[in-house]
Figure 1 (cartoon, rainbow, N blue to C red):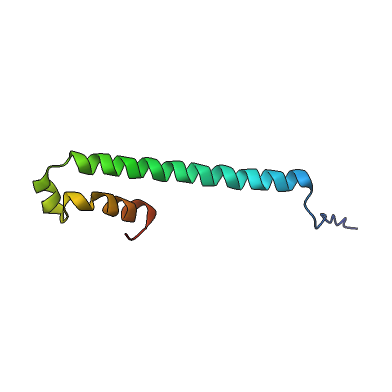
Figure 2 (cartoon, rainbow, N blue to C red):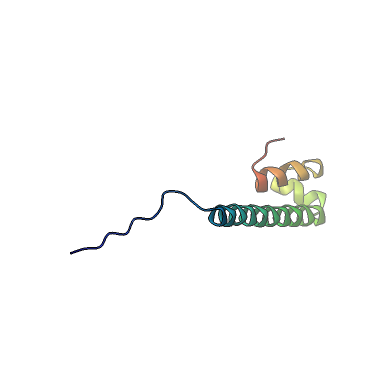
Length: 76
């Protein structure tokens, strides 16, 4: 004879809290990683000369918009 165990269909308060905190943690972690990558991209591009920037196809005034587009997928 097999024993079948049924789990309750509802989540308790503690389980919901753990789920929300886990989602919150990973969303904050993702934001921090993207922000670091964005700032690193800005820093590296600002160190380049105008001639090097022209070689890769954009001007100094486009650095911020290109970094935003690259990291955050935002078109400005």
